Length: 448
Image 1 (cartoon, rainbow, N blue to C red):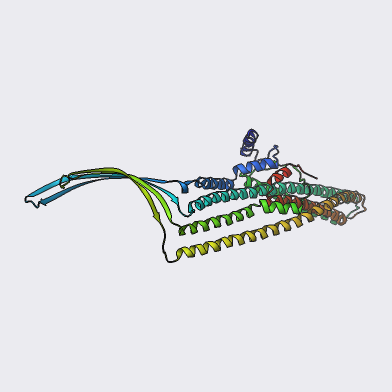
Image 2: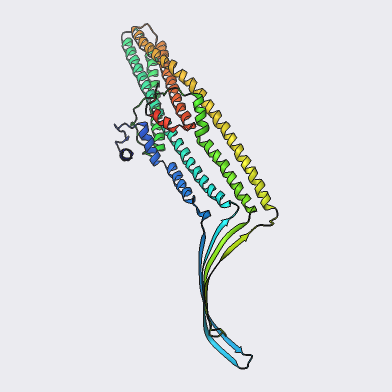
């Protein structure tokens, strides 16, 4: 706890600090630190945690507890009365003030209601569990979004590096053409073409830097950090050991948050059915109370009256006929249980289909990572050889340009395959509910 506390203080100070005009920083933040900061500050998570607290407050033993209610009333009146007695004689009262006081304490405790109180309590617990799962799903989405954005920044940075290298080569090519033009070994057209390619590579580098800044903005948004912050990530993408489909399927059935929520929906609907059926049984209450009454009326035959005392007993009530509404409610609740079971099956099919689709793409990207990595090495060597041949005049400008574009394409394909393999690897862990393994892999453990 102390480590996380000091880490949070450090991250808060880091993200709150204003750097230079572009808010660059020489401090490097890891993915784990980005996730910790995001989980602490993302508004969506705070909202779900507040809802979780509300549902926890509503989860109580209130259905089993008695109800105590106190009442009190005091009345004043001012009247005029004319009384004629049977024995003879009259009497007149003017502006007579009367007072009455009533107070009571009522106690009611339901002893039996067809077990409806148990169903009500169970529903409150399920509602809280569903809110916990919703918080978990929000956390999973935020963690995935932060991870994807973090790795995308790494990819964009590598693309910027490749674009920078290509621009340097184009600049060197332009320099070589200038020297050759001075000695008359190339035409002005070759120099102009080299200039066009140099400008094109300059524009490409600008676009890549723009994409890199956009990636930082996206990551800062998920972390609820200063949107202008950048240059705080320097990392590599490392793939973990290959995932196995059978293990993923088993973990998904047991731990997937959508399936857990759908399963709780079935339990909740069954509790609602029991609650509706409870209306068929009589309700038995123990009731008791204390009452106090006092009345003063000078104009009455009884000028003062005061009473107080305790009462207690049992009360039973049962519904006899309500237009068959109870039967309709029970039938509808049975259908609702069936719907919840069908929703679970539908959710299971959707989740498992997504799992298999992701896993198939995951395997393909794992294969692509290896040979695309080899293609980058080959294209880089070819590019260096092409520059030497071009400098010697054994390769045309168009031929050299093809080697440049081949290198850029190889780097782009390699980065795309590596990024997708890592993102899908983490997505498979999230969909199967293996967040502990997720954390292990983003910290670089469990690698090949």
